[in-house]
Amino acid sequence: MENYKKGKNIEEPLERDKIPIPNLPPNFLWMQVKGGSKIRNLLSHAINEFPEVKHVIWTGFGPSVGKCITCAEIMKREFNNSLHQITKLSYRKVDEYWDPILSELDQLIVKRRLPMIHIYLSTENLNTEELGYQAPGETIAFNKDGQNKRTSHNKKFGGQYIKSRNKNKATNGNEKSSSSNTKNENG
Image (cartoon, rainbow, N blue to C red; front, side, top):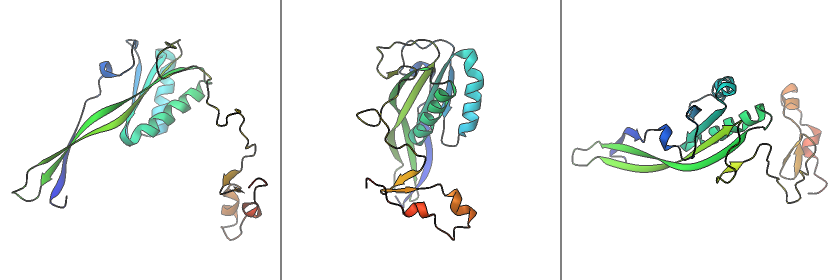
């Protein structure tokens, strides 16, 4: 690839009628999350508009999928986990053009399919039979018995409980917290 330089990218356009969620209402808020988007800006807009429209779709593709999920989860928490959710995964086509530096070479076109997520949140009841449906307040247990064993706010790392690093900042990092060297009774 040393004989090529990056050219333009042509992305498949995002269109409302191509969202893979059936029976969408005609009026919904569509939040398209991109890599440079600020979560606080996205959420403040969505939370302000949501009571009026009652339907929001969060869409992210490629590296912004994680940020899209974060926005949807924070929004659900802001509304006390009272929102119905349908999640769909798909792909978005992107053509990358690579221009040759040497005249005897041809232009390269790399066709990529980037993963894309659509998260539909609504205050109204949705089709519970739809694949990807999640009812309000529904959570997934981390353990088979449904109980989270960790009760303290300390973080477990490598079999040790480590207190918040704010204590180290107060001492300019010269003193170590005695609790960071304490082994867990189980491990």
